[in-house]
Length: 160
Image (cartoon, rainbow, N blue to C red; front, side, top):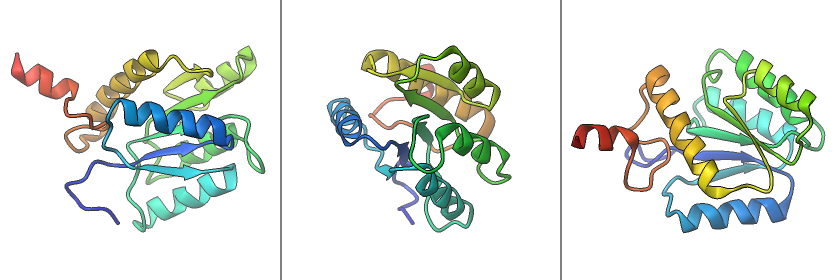
């Protein structure tokens, strides 16, 4: 369990060590305080979902989910997440190398909040992350910021 004052984790479901390292580097460069939890395949992701539901691990602020995963693909993970009564509203960004129209359509039909094709333009990715934070805030009223980098859209609105 995490400290109640600490930022919520970001769950990355990614089987490529290279892509995972690039993502970690980008998050460090942006100085995000959110801890990363990693699932390296679909089975690990579903096991994590059950731990979140039982309160054994903090529910992530967002799930970054690859489609092409060993054992259970990302679309099946997405469907299981959306069907889960305790975790179905967690924002999910498909972060994948698949630019296939059928994959994109299926991901959105299955409940993805966004779909980003790798290689990632990190500035675009952070724009999406901030939009998902707004989505999350409206639906779930989470901690002060989903992605914690010292500012959030709510902080900027209250300063105006």
